[in-house]
Amino acid sequence: MTWLEELGVRDFLAHHSTLRIIQLSDDFVELEGTYELYAQFENGQIIDDVIDLKIVIPSRYPNDVPTVYETSNKFPRTPDFHTYKDGSLCLTSEVRLRMACFDNSKFEGFFASIVEPCLFSIAYKVKFGSAPFGELEHGEDGLIDDYEKLFGVKGKEPVMLTLKALGFRYRDANKLRCPCNCGLRLGRCSLRFRLKPMRRLIKRRWYREHLTNNFTPIPKKEAPVKFRKKTLGRKYVGE
Ligand SMILES: [Zn+2]
Image (cartoon, rainbow, N blue to C red; front, side, top):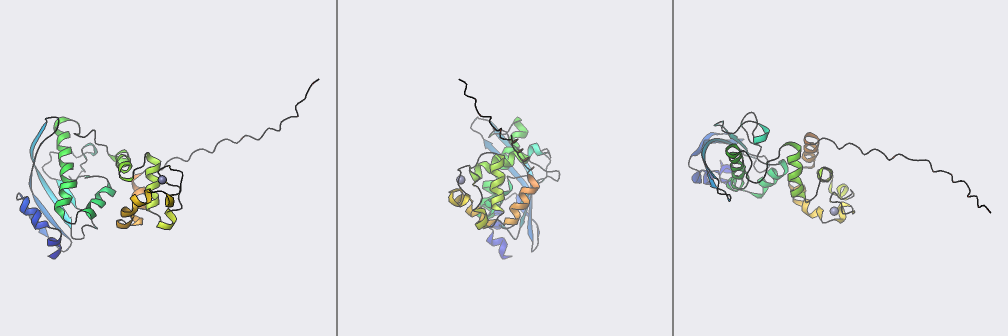
């Protein structure tokens, strides 16, 4: 199958000889096997472990995203360890994950930049109780944290406004107040350049759904209580 060659799956397997193809169809390839985790961290701590992996790579990669499962049950299947009930891993935030697919035309690059850091981070937390690069966030807080870095904005509302802008047509998005708090409209701020590849590669509808499915709405600010203007009595100027 040509897509298998295009994605460099065989090269990847040549470099990871403990993994092999278990299932292959027009839609996906499924790899399975053991994976050795060995790393010495800057603080001197060592991770030295072997886990079982199942990797499903869709033939529509990079438009569709690979799924990685930890199948040896060494990672607790809880949000704290970024592992779902079925053993699949929450590799990173959705936008970053999708962008990483487009940034890496070969699966090997995706594996090295997204999957490996995730595996090491979880394995470290399992062994030492905390994540090596600071606590791993999950859920909405984790997304906000990650999108702040990705978009270059600060705070939940600016993150949500950026996602909202990405869900709009370019022309309409440019009319919005810029999420970076520069006081300009988005069409006048350099943030629009930063968002350009994300806009080009991921569909607007996807951003709209991502925003509704993953973020709790920000409560509307209460309208300031309006006081009726006091009619000022004429000042009596006494003698
Ligand atoms: Zn701005």
